Length: 216
Image 1: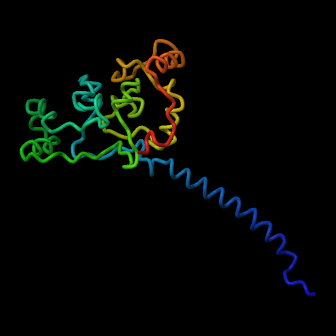
Image 2: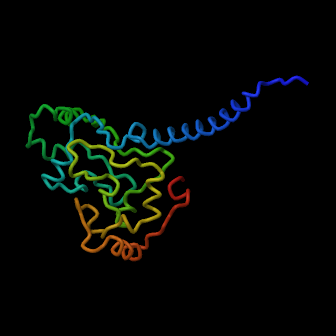
Image 3: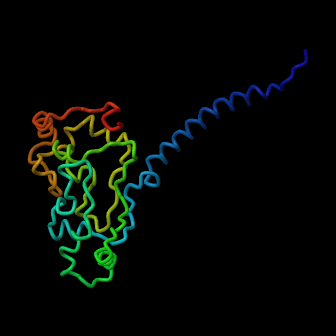
C-alpha cells in the first residue's frame, strides 16, 4: 500500500502538538496577566471627578476624620458618600468663590446631588460590609491604601477575589487595634505577627473563606 503522508508529517505533527500546548499556556498566561492589570482592575488609576477633591488636603493636612464625611461607615455596610451640605459646612465660608467648587455650589442651589464617580465599586454579586471589618480591626488604609497621600483618589488594590481571600486566610497580618483603624500611617509597637495573633483571638476573627460569606 502506498504511503499516504510524507515522512515529514511526523515532525510536523509533533511540532503542532507541542506548539498547541505552548500556545494554550501562553494564552492562559496572557489572560491572567490582563485580568490582573490596572487596565481591568483600575488599580493605581486616578478617577476623574466632578470636583477635584483632595484627601491629602482634607485628611492629612487639615486632620479631618474619615467619619466626618463617611458618616455611616461604623454602623452599616456602606461607608456613605457625603451630601453637599457637608461640603458647604466649610465651603460656604472657605474658598466660597473658588472656580473649582462651582459644582458644589450649584448642587447646593439646585438640590441636585453631585454625581461622584465610584472608585471602589464591587460587583453586584459581592457583599461587603464596612462596619464588621472596622469592628474586627481592619483599617481604612488596609483596603483603600494611603488615602492621606492622595491628592486625587485612586483604587490602591485590585479588589479581585484572590486579594480578599489573601486577607481572610491570613487576618493576623492585616488587623490592628480598633482604636487605630482610622489612624493614618499607623505602625505597630510590637511585631505585627504577635499583635495580630492576639487581636485575632481578642476580636474572635475567623478565617472565613467559604463562598457564601461574600456571595449571597
